[in-house]
View 1: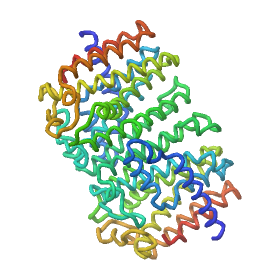
View 2: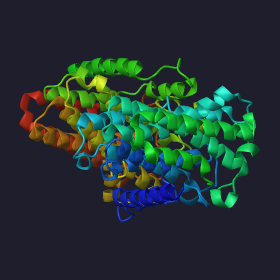
View 3: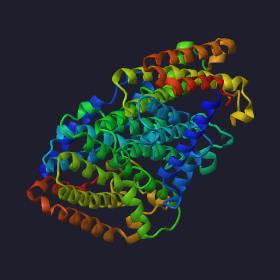
View 4: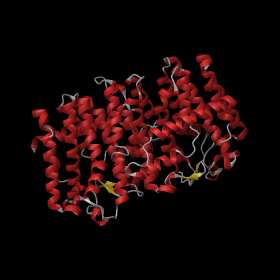
Length: 297
Length: 297
């Protein structure tokens, strides 16, 4: 695991530096909104999503530098979704990654607007022609369109709506799978896929990486569920076993811890199998898949 | 005013029909989010923003059919901003256009998500290549980028943040002008400008229409302030004089009703002057400008 940990560290530094550069600073007016946006963007995220976009692009011949605007846009979208999820009207969480959530620091109104602003900024960043000297504009439009679809009502937002509706109810595995595939899976899948498209992959390679993204998204979410049960509260930086307290459906609740671990492993295996057609170029993505179920936070 | 009223009616029908077609229906899963989105999109809006986009495109040689996806995306963005503005954490409004606001019907969580979904859907719609057979993809990317900028922290969201910060405080005219130019002006300006870009205007014509959009946005907002004071509560379909009750800054509060009317008229005159270089092609936009200060709701 040494190499992949180093890769993650290096790419995270790249993403952090780029986010700091792209996101307007607090010297702009009105400072409150830039403070609120930056507070959550720089709250210690692991940058898994942007790193997946970069790794997918690199696997198909692109460079990290080329897809950094896309990678940062995807992290802004992830951050917006966390800020809105944490709101009192939704999950009502006070802590995230060991720090007070956005609305606890800036108030509900600013948190709503900071989320809106990060979502909006993601499209501003993706659409900025200055960032795309090497891409055909039709590929940029395609990526913007696919990202919007993935995080909309048939993707991330759909999953969030169903998750809220199901809270406190007994749900079955298909319903839980719908929630996972949409609420977290759709964004992770689109990270991999959009990186692959801008990386310059052939249609077959893009399809292969899309399958990888689907399975890796599921593995990631099952592991999140597992870590919520057995994880170390300090490492996770948030209140654990909260899902259980709320009777929120998770894999361990529905199929048990041991079966959850088997299914996470099966998803990782499936994700790696999908990489077959790109051969050695899939090495980093394979290691990332293994890392996802080995992680402890 | 007969012709322009007919034009508005016809374009509104076109926009309504297209919105009904583009927006996914309640037969999709999960129905709650599509219900909430459609509730506010079909709440009797006048479609001023999409009609401005269409009129701008037509003035420069485009057709309404070509820019309908853009026009509908802009109306979705407007609707998202209203849903989030009305939330208890922000303006806390119970009624809008004579109907209960989104969160009063669907709850705060669904209203937040419906707003998010409409914002996201706007970019999905703008980025959908099936809608753009006649446009160069670089123009589509440019428009998506410009729209995102206009409704972000340096535009609409910035205005909303300052508006909230200033509530209950004594503010001066420059601060009020900042709020108006950003909270409502930026979106109206980008409606005109993006319609002009896709309509195929020369750079000089696009610039001229951009100036028109800036002035018309100001005129529109001053009229909104004026109507809030002297308007008919039934025609407006919302609680009036609420701005005054909250000590929210408005033109009439700061400069008086008579001076506000003069400034609205001056903005209309400036908007019309900006159309000089396009000559007779500006006829509809001129009539729209006159309509904006003649309207009663």
